[in-house]
Length: 515
Image 1 (spheres, rainbow, N blue to C red):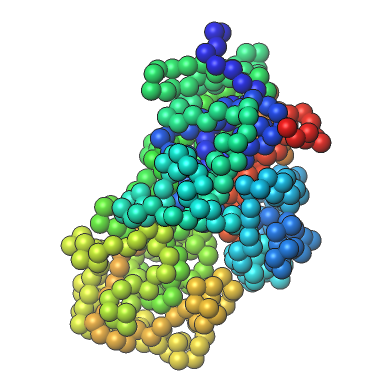
Image 2 (cartoon, one colour):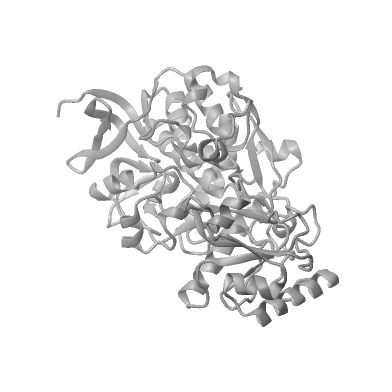
């Protein structure tokens, strides 16, 4: 093989996982190339809240957050169960605090407590304030020329909002890593560079073939290749092949999340798992044909094709998505379903966090995605549901609001349900005309099936043996949480942990001598 470039570590993908892997490898003194297939760094992490679920870490201890590690371990094991190996789960749990301690040695990487309840709040080991941290805000100007290489937020990218002067959430996380990496030797960040094939010899991955604007090049990776390029959210054929509920129109990741890196890992003999799974959410149907990840419902109720309410609208979003999928699979729910609400906010929907500005309501009306009626029976006719049922649904909601308890679906029973309403019941009466309904479908934050790995993120073959020189993390790795979403910050947190463990394994230095 004639190599065009060489390095110790080749990282594929520039989300939180890929950036963590590149940073850890560079700090270990390994020459590192990070490739990103699109024209911006950050992946889905740049759109996200940037949270990390790392029980017992120093940020929680300093900031007064919940750092009861034993309880957190028990909680995680109970939620995830035996769907993934226990040693894989423990590798995640045991490494998070260590990773934060390692990162905080760098002044460019700073974190704050961000209280966010665990997602299975009825369990006695759940935390009402969470074990959740976030990146500290970062002035955008501190990135210099790298500011234009950072993938914008969804609002900036899709809705034309101006770029912010201060980076927060996922923007701050990606921005801080870019800033820290820009000051490190041994690292080369490359945009518009996509993995097309892994190069193998005698069962070991030696490097990769990369497609870039000038053509293809061959990159030798002496220590290994880390695949952290997200899932296959935007590959419709791959979603259909593995039976992932939902469609590409509901995918909230960048279009570059096309599964190419996972396919390369599979072609090299990597086994996969959880390929029918994703991180789901109810999705607000938009005039451009997308359904976007939506949370923070502080009023209104979802109704099905029979005009009846069918779930707790304020439960954690992945649990909501799974309830929607389960009902669809039983032929109990058809899309779209509708968020029904009254005119107490002059027709604005009771949604606090649509994750992308909702925009002009008239555009939704023109697309048939927002419908109204002077009375509930007229609204029922507009959305094609039985009038008697919709009136009965509203009457029942009004009774429950008056009593302060949702006896039907338990809305408000868990801490997460009330996080957007400062503790009050997240329900309002439906009694102020005119009445409105917005169409909803299914969205996802990314697929969570991918390459099977061991606790050091080494990709495993069909016999369970590691493939030398090949690692995976983030949504390119079969999720350590299995079919569950235990808490906010779990996807990013686990992606960072296993990328860090991969870099440490490639460095072959458990003491991690910094350079």
